[in-house]
Length: 347
Image 1 (cartoon, one colour):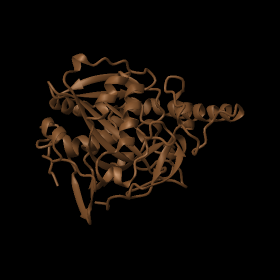
Image 2 (cartoon, one colour):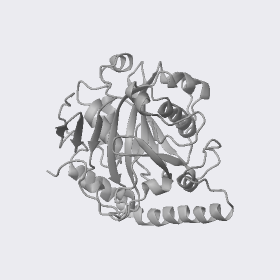
Image 3 (cartoon, one colour):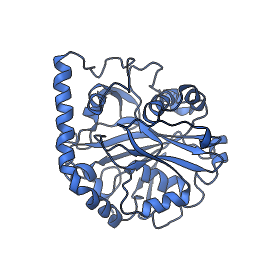
Image 4 (cartoon, one colour):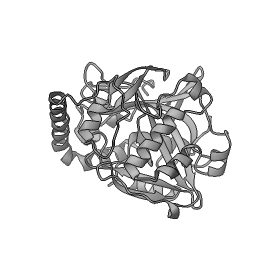
């Protein structure tokens, strides 16, 4: 296993090994830093929570009355990111429900899979992906700030693009065991192309070329209640097995971006040192999945970001067998289902 240098932003690391899998806990930075971030966002969360739930509920009523809603088993081939609201995405998108070993077992709406309640304290485990796009000439990483209108984890800085493969799409977005085993993951690649075009307005032709060069590195299983936005009894959260994809372009100067305003509030190209400075900025919020990936594998010396050529052109950092698992920091536990430590043993 690759060890990460301990820095101010990579505190509380703890590994546990068991069989062919490894568990990872912490790595979100100090609890004090997370507390400061939560305090900074508390003033807006109550209004946002009630607005978001009302929006999804009203859309559900309207869609059912008009017979327009797709059931979890309905094909999503007519998916059009330009014509749907955030609430409609929650109702219509059908994510890939998996078991603990990432075997697809069924489907669920995006809304149902992200609801945290006493019946499903951590929502429903489903498949996801996270794309990290780099400028090869400067080694800068493209970040996005999730839009304030997002229902889950709004206003947070995160990696280039993070979303879900869906059922019933054309081209297919469902990968089987062999696709993961050999690292091809064509379904996840197709989903990444779809969402990069939707969220960042990237050119379709350029995306199709880029998809062939995506580097699938490994998988991360995590969960987190969205308590920063919606309070300690948040009805929303994430519970995902996240596929990590790296990509590079020769230079950012040749990349035309047109971010979708309901998806992205801001974008920023950053070096490693600039990202660390952002992590130290108490006024900024970050997604929990981005922090875990960055702190575990990307910053602190000897990580994927230090030698992009090696990362992209060899399999030195590829691990298709292990599903790295972690619980969130205490500040992202709870939610409406009062979820506590689960993937990692308590300290």
